[in-house]
Amino acid sequence: MSADAAEIPILKITGLVKSFGPIRALRGVDFELRRGEIHALAGENGAGKSTLMNVIDGILQPDSGEIALDGQRVTIKSPAMAQKLGIGFVHQEIALCPDVTVAENIFMAATNSSRALLMNYAAQRARAAEILKRLGNINPAAMVRSLSISQQQLVEIAKALTLDCRVLILDEPTAALTEREAKVLFEIMHKLAAQGLSIIYITHRMAEIFDNCDRVTVFRDGQYITTMAVAETTPGAVVSAMVGRVIDDLYPPKQRQEDRSDEIILEVRGLTEARRFRDISLALRKGEILGLAGLIGAGRSEIVKGICRLEGEVSGEVRLMGQALALNHYGDSIAAGLVYLSEDRKGDGLFLDMSIASNVSALSLRQVASAAGIIDEGREAAQAQRLGARLNLKYGDIGQPASSLSGGNQQKVAIAKMLSVNPKVIFLDEPTRGVDVGAKAEIHRILRDLANRAVGVVVISSELPELIGVCDRVLVVREGRIVGEVTENDMTEDRIIYLASVGNDQQVA
Image (cartoon, rainbow, N blue to C red):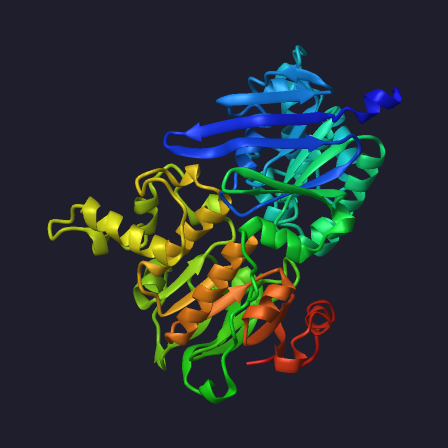
């Protein structure tokens, strides 16, 4: 390659415009990707990042503007055409076929284009095993339905690695990964970049940008704001460019010493599910935010689902405000005032094809129904608008489908659905996964406001800074048991990681 050719960007976007009805998602944006670089794309949810990537991948067609690959103008009419041009896209939302094997998912595109009459499954699984060896211990013959969310994300990445890519787009690829899995991914990214592959990396995590990327481009409200060399800027400068203001307080003030109460809102005694957790006892006090920490697979989500009777044959006692609850299924839990926000927004959190208003009212239709049991669309819309305003939800029309929203705004709809039933205790599983820094601060503020109003708040998070920043007390789960409690000065990443990986002999009630 000549020196002049090397200077030509592998991908150049000029003046791209895309509107959805009255909403202008992209306002004449520019973007440039160099050969062999890892280029971060940052911005709040709704800034236009996903829209631009969908245009580059051929999922959406721009209203105007130009896309050039290797200096040649191209029109990308479909994802299949994008793949032929050397563009691979790993979406934030997992889109695998759950009822076929890992190997079949990885090579699905190649299988669809093959003219062979018979499938050589043994060869396919062997090839898949070679690719997966670089990412983690995943059985290529396993059904995708049996995999955890983090394992499914690695399969999505493996699919992209099978393509002969020149440009690889990674949209929040570590959102569902463990720290070890993320580290492996970063090593692979750097190897690929060294081999000349160009990577667009979308993330809300500043540490990932500054540890792994060469440059960062910021979008805000559908507009290009700036591009900066990572080595020449700071996380604060990037955040300020993203939100158009300085965010001083990502985490609101914690509960004051003089406000702490011995009054117990929720008490769990001896909760056990034979295969996944045992003898779980905990107490949630008035005004506090309680965190659950632990490694992936430790049993954090399973414990909370057991409390709410979402799954499993569970024994043990659950008491709310001192009264024992008779819980047989999740409907009983909702009626009692215990609600659970799933970590899987797409699979369990929302009805993506239904309207924003319908999603918000889904937990209790009685609140928006007439005496005859018919949904009052006016009341339903008013409820969604009220809760949407409280969460700073960005949307065009309250009747638009949830699928039309950005990932962060979808998460706000899921939270609004929980709040619609005026819960006494709300369990939030990874509440800010895939949410931008501005929305994170808003959600943290909302959680503190709920706690201040005597609503019990329990947060499960894989982000230790979030647990430390927002929680008053953190219980650490290891192998289905609570092995430690951290508070105040003891609440450090080192201490939590030690308990999560090593544990101790004392179970905490």
